[in-house]
Figure 1 (cartoon, one colour):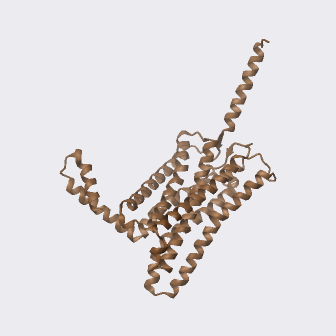
Figure 2 (spheres, rainbow, N blue to C red):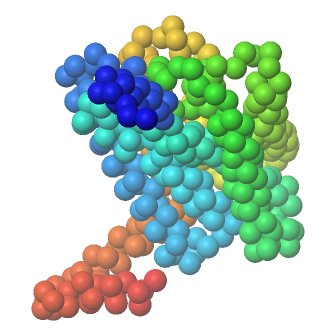
Figure 3 (cartoon, one colour):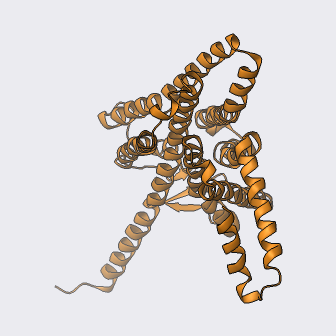
Length: 356
């Protein structure tokens, strides 16, 4: 059978339409970026500077904890894990946002959106779980100071780190799997980055179908497990610490406050950011573009930037370690300044290694 030219042309058109439909199905667009005009360059500058500051602050504190053996304690190991998680969370979002702002192409693949949702969800869940572990660590150090090293052993630290990071990630992965099974009928995301609620709102499924009910129920369960329960445990631990401090001497109260204040500030800051994120998800369709962007930045940009700064300012041991490293750097540089340029960096590195 020989096909005529008209039939072949029609077939090519159908094939072309199918390819375009497939391409649309695999690509999501962000509507918030549309119509921003020159304001996107202002936003790009703000995000780029804040993200750069986040990277520098987090990596500096991580290197400080890693290199200074006096900071190889459970508390600072937990801090290391917390700020590393913040760095992963911000990196999951802001490079893509900066790319969209610079190219003015507000598109993302469906798979890339799911990856972003997973990293974002893991960031939030691991933050709460790690803050809970740190509250437990502070609780033991204040209530059982003499037994602290027999309770918080190196093996216990490894177990806590594993549970605080692996369990939330596994639960979020389960949520992503359920979300990925929902068929999509819409492809426009009314946010500046992907989140789980943003994807489920694009689903064709009615809320009364079994698959939608299972997805919603699972979402409620993991919200309780990874957010509500940790907040309750943290608040409970600090209520007990506060009650004990009121019965203690003035010096003991001061020491307890100095020990716990960085963690309390970080906890309050992240809890408020998460609360704003809930508000953002609930009322997103009714928010103007500026409020949409500000609420988004408050959740994923501000906490990772503030965490290393707060611990650097409010923790005496970190301040002392930073001053010590800075003095050693100046000393090593002054001793090596007359060395040939080809060996200058090796000289400085060797001096720093000897003095650590």
